[in-house]
Image (cartoon, rainbow, N blue to C red; front, side, top):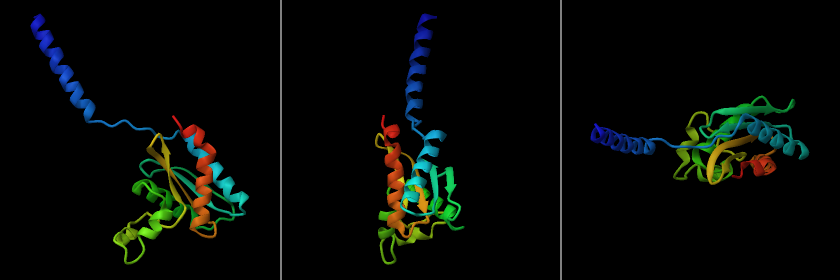
Length: 163
């Protein structure tokens, strides 16, 4: 009986370690952190005189928060979400992706993916070297300004992103 229990325990231990390799642990932003990031980003744009929409997505590109200033254009919520989604999916800013996906470039075809926007203003959010989400901004006069607002919002909460 003791031998059977020992063999069963060894088998369970070996199965348990195999199962552990079949799963990945990851971090996600809490709703309060995502909301604070969106607010800080919106405020950064307001201080620059811009009426924008800000979208914060989780690591999978699903919207967690959407804020839109009263005078931001009707297109800005969808555009901000597409930028945030692209930044998370491709793990780089849409400012960089904008140049890499121009007509004639090797990666130009990805511009045709539905729901993704490859204009400046989408920035991945990292914590301890892992992507935990993304922020997208639309409505400032140009992608560089949208990008600057997104980065200012991230900077405002970076102490909460650190381990």
